[in-house]
Image (tube, rainbow, N blue to C red; front, side, top):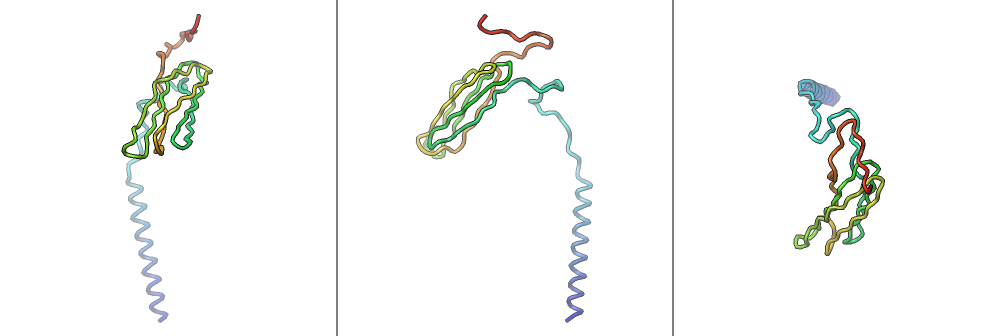
Length: 139
């Protein structure tokens, strides 16, 4: 009986050792991830000064997005609502401009349950050229 226990323990140890070696070799031979810039990354090293911060609140079948823009560029936001039922119509809001240091509330709804809701962003005005002052609206 004792010989069987030692034999099984040795067999299990060898199996774990071989599996660990195979996994380590596979990890070592795996190609390293490439460090490419994403297509949406800003071209300069500084962070992009664009994009309102939005939070969505779902209450039953109604969705509200609260967006505030801390940046000097105007952001055009849209609320997208996907409904849970197959017969319920998904909706996209009209674009709403959120100016610098401004706040906007966008609402949407489903007839029944909401599956998901998200906000998309788009610049309302072109990015200023480097060294150019930002345009002042209303003057």
